[in-house]
Amino acid sequence: MKKSHDYPKVSIIIPVYNMEKYLGKCLESVINQTYTNIEIIAVDDGSEDNSIEILNEYSKKDQRIKVYQNEVNRGVSHTLNHALKYSTGQIVARMDSDNIMVEDRIEKQVAYLMENPECIVVGGQETYIDEDDKIIGGTRFPLSDKEIKRKFFSFQPIADPTSMYNRSKIPSEVFYFDESLTVAEGLDLYFRLFKYGKFANIEDSIILYRQRQGSLISTDIKRTFKFISIVRKRAKKQYGIRPPFMAGIINFCQKIITSILPIWVAVKINDIIKKLTVKV
Image 1 (tube, rainbow, N blue to C red):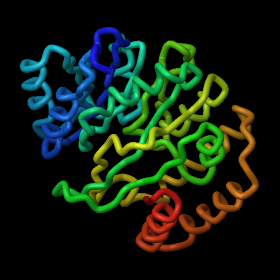
Image 2 (image 1 turned 45 degrees about the horizontal axis):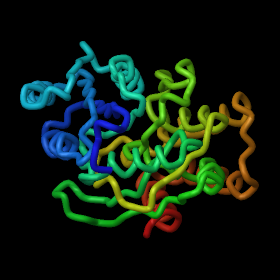
Image 3 (image 1 turned 180 degrees about the vertical axis):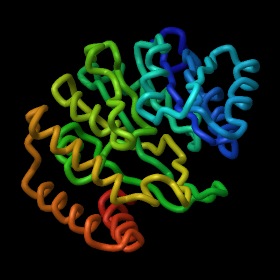
Image 4 (image 1 turned 30 degrees about the vertical axis):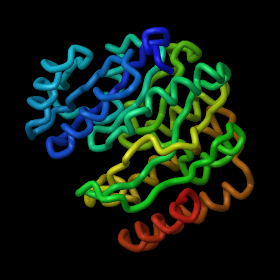
């Protein structure tokens, strides 16, 4: 893919909250993508550090960066919707402000969508890094639509920061993040998109995913799984999606683990299960 201007514009949406330590590396990885027909919509969610100053400085260097700010902290779902409101691309790519894009991430995913017009969501593999950028692991998410959709009741088989959406094939009233969900907002959107097209992951690692101590999932796994359970119930009752039998068993075990065991034990077991299911 040598002529990016012959391909559709990609809106890269980035919610930002107190990420001054990692934000520069994130933005550098985005503006240096091999695919250049992009706009970068960054929304600061009422950060209390220097995140907004960093965003404004980068927007002066690269006119493709558009910066917006919530007056107060509103949460990731509202912030993503805020970014979507100002995005103009036919394709939307999600990015987290503490992660790093592989330089040809956008190029590879756009190529996949162009070659597979029935696909509306494409993700990819992740390489895990720690707070000091040291590689500590990776994923092996399923590739095919059938396998991906079968896994959503067991774990999330498309990682949010790798997700790219062919917006032109999704009804506008469907493409939003539920602001009542402080986590699992991506999972809810995936379920709503099931009937509109195919899902896929590319084989390559396209994101350096930063695993930080103190992140929401690691510190409050019981609350996180509560929202995941709400979304999965909604998928069955409102969206009419039937989970595979084994997924139901796994889901039940997850409920037991997160409701009965101490948080630190639940986190450890959750990490083991994830490594067994998606680690390379």
